[in-house]
Length: 176
Image (tube, rainbow, N blue to C red; front, side, top):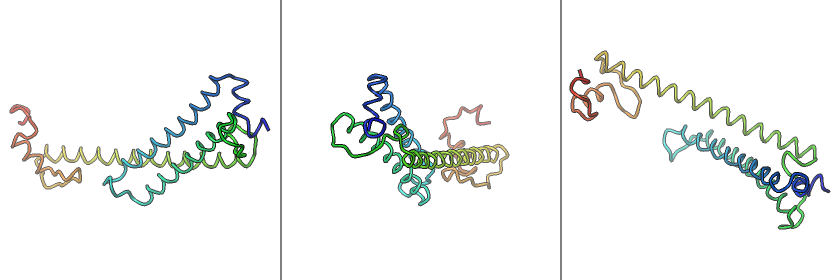
């Protein structure tokens, strides 16, 4: 079954070792992208030790689906090179098979959906941090030190005290 179980051997036969290495590189890059999505999810948590359940689910979902795709591809490559016995695993996105192709498409759609949500959440978090920083700067510029910004627990009053105590290493003329 060259079009199913031994598709990797056929690819290497047709396009050479460089084509086979390129296909392996594509699967490795898919796994790398999943790791970068998980790292972005970790940055969304307020505390590194305690991640919200919805973010944990997204991490497990992305890692699980990606690991399934990459391990299935590696399994097919190992079968094609006679490292392991024939398992009947298809090469994701390459082998002939409607149900496999359909499931891989759904899995990639889920991964891309999580990636898009993480990007949106990251952009919202960045905008909130930028707004809070602007509020803190405006509060110190206006002399209104009663505004407390949740930016690492630093309020306008704290910023003024740091300026007066010269903790920020600001020159005398810049302080005024």
